[in-house]
Length: 183
Image (tube, rainbow, N blue to C red; front, side, top):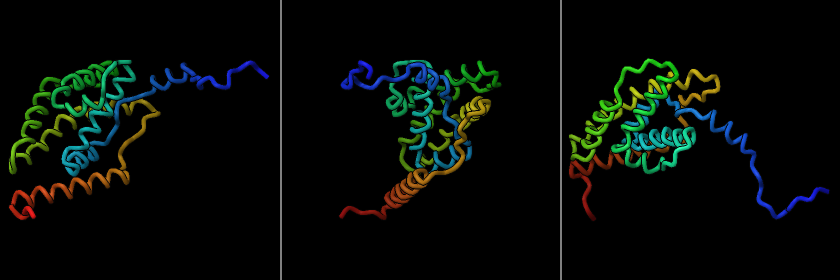
């Protein structure tokens, strides 16, 4: 029997972890799914979208960032994400015609609109436009990898979030029409 310490914590294979980091890709989601989820979850899917991309940058680049906070405050951090995605796309020879600062301004304006009362807040869904444009480039880059996991199908969890979004939307509309009263 070897002299091994049975009380020692398990050791990991660092090379395996490094290889795992190298294979990470940006978040692939079909444009159709991004739009449907973005609208029917009342924008909550945007948090997932930002989180997945920031999480990739954290591990791929070894950056000490907090993807959760950058997702929650996406209205502030979106410029740096758009800029990094554009740089990575160009490194992969993906033709990118959009400009990060314009995507940021567009997203920022419609993020502010989301805080306005109805009917103005309905226009906040236009904030999905820069995400769709950026995601189109991301998909082109990710699909070059034969090991790419395509995210085109709706999962059970997606349908749960859609149901919650629809329920909240109905509540918002009923409340704005004065049909919900305090008991």
